[in-house]
Image (tube, rainbow, N blue to C red; front, side, top):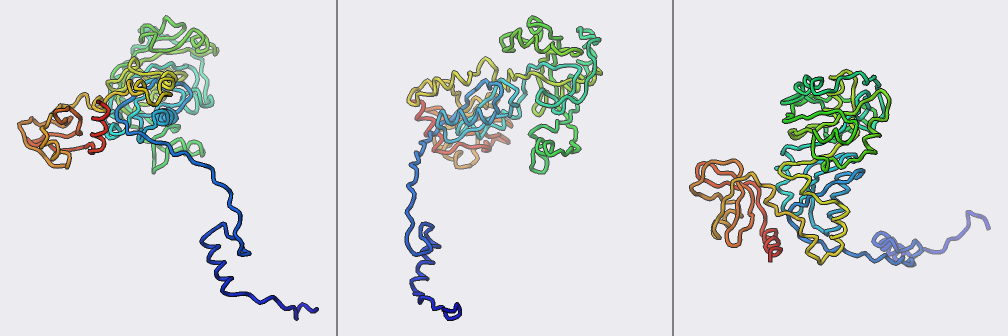
Length: 387
């Protein structure tokens, strides 16, 4: 039979059209019009999230990012909403406040607070990242430095008070919506503008052995051992410098260490960083992540809830104002209230009987003006947790 005279079986147009419609609507329908065998779907277990509100203080462990710790805590608590109040590098440890639920509304208050750090800098080596993660870019013999108190006096004075600091390229600071470290990893060097930060206090001491740390801060806060002291001094031509820094928000301790090293003429990079205070929260208030994991395994136990501080701990410096039931309802709807109040930029507003946080506000000309408010569901959840 000639191919030109080959007869095709007649096409059932309506059936073909039906198949096309089915195929477009149902991916399980085959071209032949016969339904494909569906693969059984895996059963998905929906996690029941809990409405939790407050602040959990975690001593961030070495090697984990702040977000990894946040997600771990959120998963352990089965919390609906959580966030942290300031990133710590994976190589840093220490105070990491985790805000839960309504507390996330006031996290910016804590982001703006002063921080205190303990650090160890290796003098005599600069790196690409200003810390131990980067590659060494310059070596200078630091063995002849005078690191006595008198020898460090001039440098200490130069780096105390308001100073200009250029953020490092390997940082989370965003330029045009993109983190600086993304540009750095792509091999791009941006002209980052210097900005002013404030170093409130700066303590420095050469670090050869553990006892050298006592003059800087309590040994228990350092969380170091003699093995680290040996490692810190193991590189020939370098010296180790211990620092304690209380600073304003936005201060990069890596950059500070590098700048101090450059001022001494030998360069430096950070080999240890620990945050021991963030605002009113200190390292002694924090819980080890592993210890929290152990008590959080029992979801029905109140032990996991015990370390969670109330949301108002973020507003400790605020002027408290209490409202009666009628004014509380109106305030929560966004209405201003009138009273004999002095002008104040930072006010924490509470309902009476029972006392519960309603939100933050400011007062001006005898008026209470709402800023950030909790919603009724959050307030009811907080009240239920108090029962």
